Length: 389
Image (cartoon, rainbow, N blue to C red; front, side, top):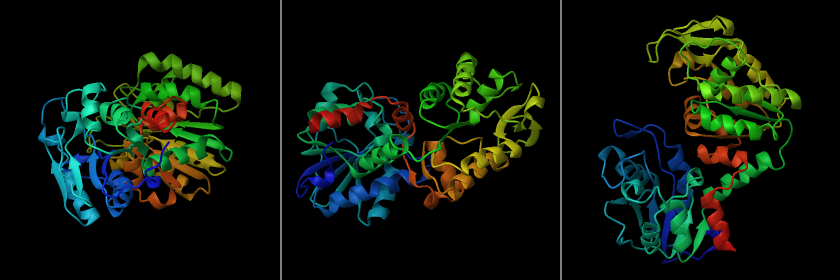
């Protein structure tokens, strides 16, 4: 891929795709990790005298309709403070934007435009017409072939990768292509079906696989343990059984929780009860791994050479169900292993437990992170490679 840092940017119209899909609560940003990750790219382009236009999505608004809850206005305000200069939010930008040298303009949510998610060619060409150089710095969206991530790269005069995109790919290559052994993968969170498919491909690469969250419940059901009303995708239970058998054949057993933390309802006031994995009641929700299981998982990380972490072990947003994720986070932070962590829930856990400086590399990506682990071709990366050729 061409690199932004290798190009002359002075006076050029530089259109940068970032992933500034930050979590909001009552219109305020609750975690600015993604903004801080993309900030150096914007600073470098501005320092070089570029006319900087920034694209991003936020949330899942209905295409073609403005939704104030999905506006990038809070992001523009935050970037203004971070950059130490005004960042103007351009609402109607697709037909042209005025941008001076050394100025940064944030373009309103790309998902307000009809055709963005379907990679509409006409829309992509209009985006490309805005710039002299297109920079994709949003590895987190690289698995999606959309107008702002893929189509525009086909038609822009020059298309290149930003520093964050390059750093993300370099870190993943280090973790997967020539990892220090043993390589331990921790996969948790609530998106069961998407991640179970990844686990099968990971088994060919890792020495140890640890599962948590809704995935762990699915594995518990696969071995005949009760899971009550817990998150589980029944049509994936057979897949979980197959993964367990594949792991045994490779000598890389998938450890099943021996104890869990349950609640009767999914809310902040739910009472947390530690139970043996065999004692989950019909009306229980498994919200975390238990302390015995958490300690066992942590001990597996002590001898690791490389750790790949995607997804929390429980509902850590509620403190009473956060012990498992906190124990895991602390173990990763304390480990001398090269560690790479990614995914929205993972970023929030890292921020909550204050370990950001003790993880080797924090990826802003979730789905792209997983698909790269799986060995899939990422459309937004592939098109940059084609343009460089």
